[in-house]
Length: 142
Image (cartoon, rainbow, N blue to C red; front, side, top):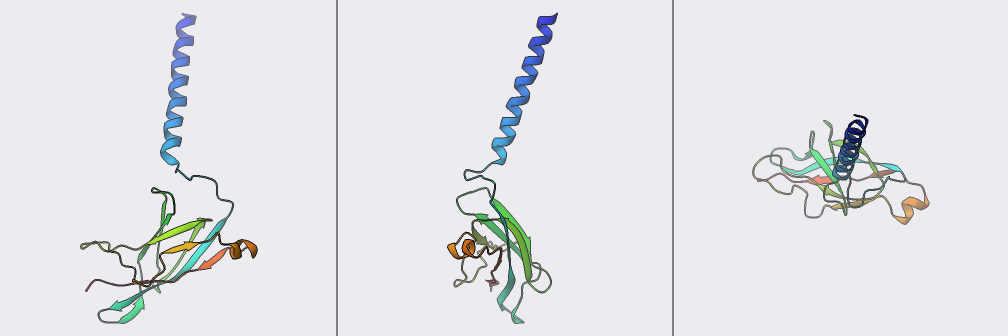
């Protein structure tokens, strides 16, 4: 009876450890590491070709930041009524994504819009910069 109890305990223990490993692997990224610091990226999201208003704030627009080098590392934020947004992220380089939320699906960033922001530049580290201003210009479909 004692041997059966020990075997059952070992089996449950091994199953528990196995489940923890699966959950940990599911939540990690290829470049997963704890960031040295958090930084703030903020700015204004502007529609440059609104059919009636011309250039106007993109209130309620969603901005997605994808960590470069990680296909599953996304974080998003929404612009407020004035088009302003603010997000805290781990230090790094991020690709900016703004997609049309309904059909047809297309990239809403203007052709001249910078599509990456890097918070780990030498100047940023040299001056301990923690707030990065980054305005985003988008276009609507015609």
